[in-house]
Image (cartoon, rainbow, N blue to C red; front, side, top):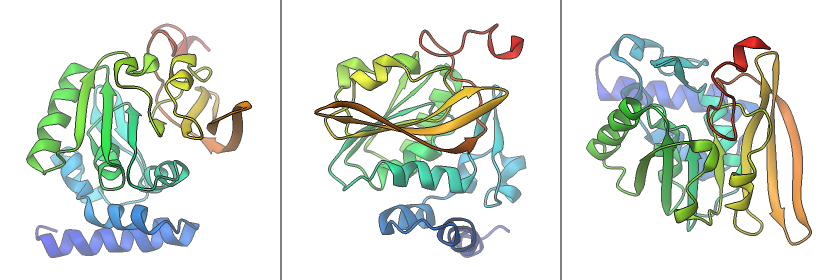
Length: 223
């Protein structure tokens, strides 16, 4: 598969078979998944598998999430198009690119400087100009850019980081996997006038969120 039309056809099949058939209906999410060239966000040796129903390695022990997971986490934010959003765990930049097609402004933070630099160069080269890449401890968010009208965390935390909840706008959602290597649950937290309302969704499997309010280096593997 080496032509743009072939890659586009692969994206159309991915959206129809992996995303629409699983019940995702948000037209902006579906269109973003059709448009963003996922194969350009994975290592060259992984490109033949870019549109398959699975996560893929991207280096540094990190992965690019399964297409359906990217789509449903994006849909769960219930974005309208005028929001500033935060992604924790830039990875290859793919989730940030999807968000950039839906939100007004995207901030994404990555602890691995080499991954962040590659993602930033890739996003700029592909024209995703409303994405700002930061290097740092994602479990602490980016307080100087807060509040955010949506937050996605693409790694599993032992519990929901207080710092991220504090950076949510009123009525906005935080979508995050919570748990350890033995089992995780995708959760959605909403900030309301009455406080934070948590919602447990379904089991998932993510790499650990490292940082001050995430997993320490020796904790994940000792459980």
